[in-house]
Length: 336
Ligand SMILES: NC(=O)c1ccc[n+]([C@@H]2O[C@H](COP(=O)([O-])OP(=O)(O)OC[C@H]3O[C@@H](n4cnc5c(N)ncnc54)[C@H](O)[C@@H]3O)[C@@H](O)[C@H]2O)c1
Image (cartoon, rainbow, N blue to C red):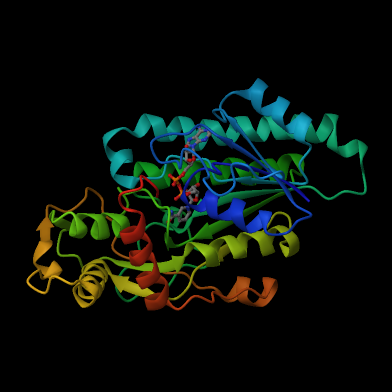
């Protein structure tokens, strides 16, 4: 199979690239703008014969179309996006450009590719997998259990609003043009290679550098954590078994309060540290809450469990401790 991935140098994209390359029948072409959030080189894939890369912005219609026409993918995974909620509050424009206009441009280029090239080879089945987020559903109140695929769209941050807008465009392309798309909504990911600005890497690296671990508000916000390797496995299976026009929610039923998560990581660091005078819990401080901060995200995974036969496999504490170990090992190597 030939997979074209946008945002393949980002956190989730880089794990997806690695997973797909494990099958020696697969070829992967990665289109990425290489923003601050990316891994500048996919260190263990850069010399791979079945992996190729082009630095480009998905807003560049002509170049995106050229890459599609040359590579001729069977599957497109769209992960390219601006993703940090805090940054979206400070500079929403980048999010509108990358997440809304970028997705629109990619759709247009893919539509031309399908019309001009792909459909000549009629027996092949093309799918466009659009990676969205559970944040498009907004925030659950304490007594509301979880989001389903039928939950209303109620985005609260410029980031989630930009992702929600792209989802609506995607849906319209399916309904109007029969565009072969599947949309996924995943909960919060953790694992190696995530940018240091994100919550779990921030906790680990600030603790290791003896800096304050900043927790918004009272830290009671709830998030449903999934290991990135479980997420990309779901994406691969969805690209094989998913039904065109459908949406699938992906989660792992690991609901944690932000403050509890910070404490779990600090306690683990205490347990493995040689310097018993340091108590990493002391680095936790509370700061003014994020504007419009969502209280709770949680995912009902019944649809993907039943229809796709996918289930998360990685035990939360095991996955988290291994992630902490990875950051400790790689903290001075400039890797993430
Ligand atoms: N991280 C999460 O917890 C999570 C959860 C659910 C959904 N998602 C979605 O998954 C996708 C990937 O998330 P991530 O955490 O890996 O993000 P990331 O910020 O780590 O990586 C995004 C990648 O996209 C690239 N990019 C940004 N704008 C681009 C553009 N205009 N053209 C080409 N490339 C561009 C960046 O260079 C980067 O490599 C996003 O669409 C995000 O909304 C993320």
